[in-house]
Image 1 (tube, rainbow, N blue to C red):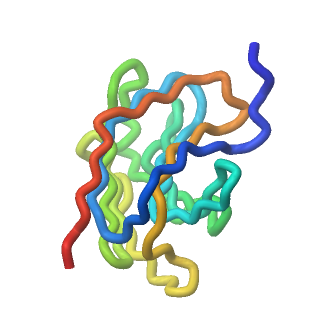
Image 2 (tube, rainbow, N blue to C red):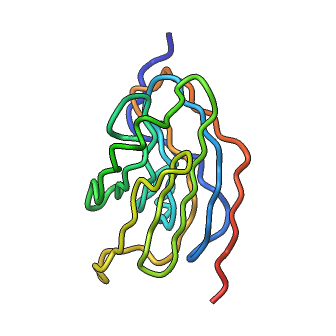
Amino acid sequence: AEAPLAQNTYLVGDGVYSDFVLRLRFRIEGGNSGVQYRSRDLGGFAVKGYQADIEDGPNWTGILYEERGRGILVKAVKEVEKTIKFDDWNTFVITANGSKLKQEVNGVVSVDFDDTDEKKRGAEGVLALQYHPPGNFEIRFKDIRIKPIKK
């Protein structure tokens, strides 16, 4: 077996995005992952900012988490759990528009949040895909599309 992963690692995308609709599909088998958005690239495969959480287990997929920040900002609605397919592809739609953040898992709105904390909220940043310690699991992403929201 591979050595355990010591810390979160991220595949960090090119480009900085502020207001957008991000659509993607994911499939997870064991473990914990997530989609970072409006995040700051800290270098060394580390980021700080909003995360739409994905986990192979109840209660976590669809939450809004702030990596290296305020932690859990909003827990996902319970209905999301019933939609997750652990042996198939799932759909995540993330909308960031001004201070408003919305996350949908398989057509169910998991989080609809207005981040009114002007000092701490993220207005723009990179996208990144997370791989969480201790590792030894599989997460796949596909059909990643982002559409900027024109002001």
